[in-house]
Image (cartoon, rainbow, N blue to C red; front, side):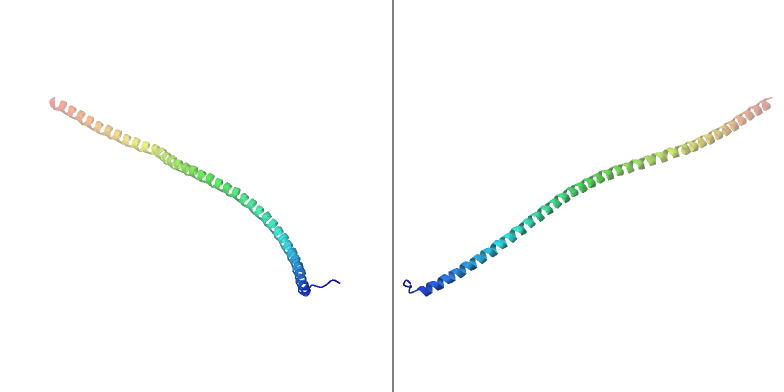
Length: 142
């Protein structure tokens, strides 16, 4: 054999440690590769989950818009109903006045009849009194 290097044992120890370190590096590399693969799978799963969550949020957003639209329509309907109730109240008052009008007309007619009767009675009494006085005056004059 060829002459051995005086530092052969040291070099052999260094080479042995380098082989061990290299072996450990390959193991670490394999571990990192597996970890990266697992992370990639988890990221893919999270991406899918995020996409599903975004789709659900979009669906909820459209539902919220629909609910807001229904709320607006209900508000408009409520306004229309309020106006309708006001109109009905005005119409109710008008109807009450119209229903009271015949009674008021009857009272006015009754009052007018009483006035006419009173006028006829007073006129008759006055006419009778005047006729009596005229008759008396003719009797006295004769």
